[in-house]
Length: 318
Image (cartoon, rainbow, N blue to C red; front, side):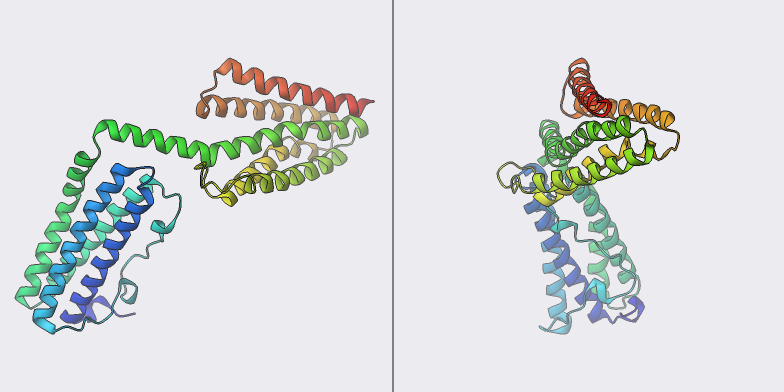
């Protein structure tokens, strides 16, 4: 990697050209990644892409006048001092707020590059262009706000925020909630059946651990293989599978861990308290994200949990 201060004016211009081309393509990827679910924000990024394309054309024109047709390939990663950018633009689904935050960071970095490059350039024409671009990058934030107002009026923003919440529920909350409910409720029967049958904390813990791990693996594969998300909008199947499987295991492990307590009665009471906490968390999630009324959510979750607990207790006591 080269030091920035060691770059020649020719290399500075070449670096500026490749940087503008990279930013232009990143904004194009942002626009493409958001076009289906957030068309207004995609249009905003398309406008920013066009501005970066204009900067690149001006840089190339000046480069040709000063140094000819051949532009050496020098990129950000070839020069010390630039921040390494994670390839956010390749992620699907692309999160709208993450894209906007990344765009702001890109503009700040580009502005500082032009300011530093202009300060060490002796050629008047190059320095003038770099100063102009630094000024435009400083005002790019204002331009982005103008694009935001133009492309994203309040009603459109509200619609996009609603769409974002819907995607979050579909891709994260639903598989996570399904796993948490299955892990918290379905493992009650084997854990408490083993506890009442053996009156031994360690045996109950082993049964709960096995049930939680097995249920997590089973639910994870079932969710991942249910659909590929292309028509339902539920996101990547394996991401959903990991979320669902992990939350299933967490739901079962929660009321299994208290049986590490050697005193069986104390372990049993502690497990019961954890179960109440788990059912309360499920009720809150259903009310918060699934718009289920408090009473209805509590009755549905509580009834299921009580029935499964009674089943395990009866089987273990028989």
